[in-house]
Figure 1 (tube, helix red, strand yellow):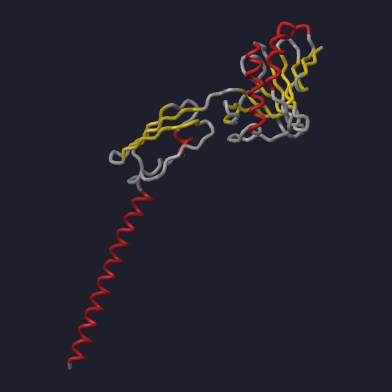
Figure 2 (figure 1 turned 180 degrees about the horizontal axis):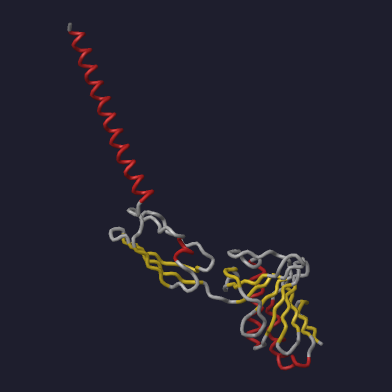
Length: 245
């Protein structure tokens, strides 16, 4: 009799436990379903107000698409036009503020394709050499224009060339600017030659070798600046030696 009563009690406790588990699972299902409905079909968990400043060439749709981000979502602005951004959010008011700093144009980089079936393309680059937007083909002293004959396919968001090549080219820019020479067109020759050419407004070509340290070119260019109208070229492709005609 005693064993029978103990068995009844155990079965009763087990039944209550099963009932409790079922109730908990049912409540979790209801809550989960409600959360899923709010998450998928309403804007309950999305920012109700988004303020974006510093934009000139981008829209909110360019950054986030048609749907605003979730309030608990990590916000990251991924666009080649964006140099940096600052985010502040108020979760209680469901407001999001983004201050965007867009990339500054430094020069135009054009890929000159050898194939007749491929069209030339030009891009704006910033001071680091990043390709961030399409640009018009241009020549003139006001905007630095580099015509790339290396055959490299350019893609927005990539760098125009290797870090070493870009550093050498930017160093040449500084030397030419320091000398006060107006350049209407720069040319990056095929990789095998590692040459960089600059066409001055006066018509003289200046030849550089990207394998070399360009410091030796500073003084010769300053000395020859006044003779550019009478010169066909200045050849700086041999280290510490200057040839001109």
